[in-house]
Image (cartoon, rainbow, N blue to C red):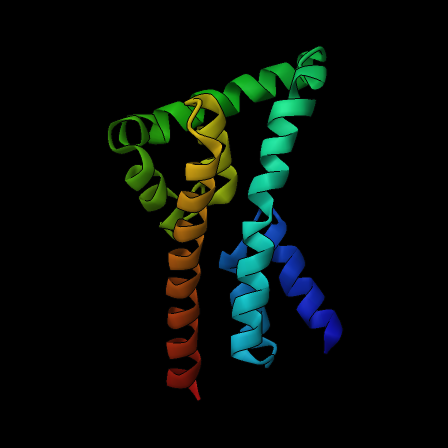
Length: 152
């Protein structure tokens, strides 16, 4: 049982799923739905400070490697094209909305990259990401809960 909580937490910090995968995983494994929500939410929120540290302190060392540099430029272009206009136009609120969409390509990783690229205030961006993650997690949690109840 504890291993399932750890796996749900790991999905929540993974760029391949975030809490959008961690919450359903935990709920479908029969774990306590409230504990799963809190663990996955907190795990997903913790990604933002780690990403900002990486982008501020470590990123410039990796840019020396051609493969990493090409990948970083690709991701930066995708982030600017996909969310740039809305985040620049609406700022804090645009970032909340972008992070809260429970679809692939949005979330705290993309929100962190957007924060870095658009040189937003880190404290405000952390709050915006946290609010967005909360709403995204609540949407996924509610949808998963209703689906489980409907199928049982």
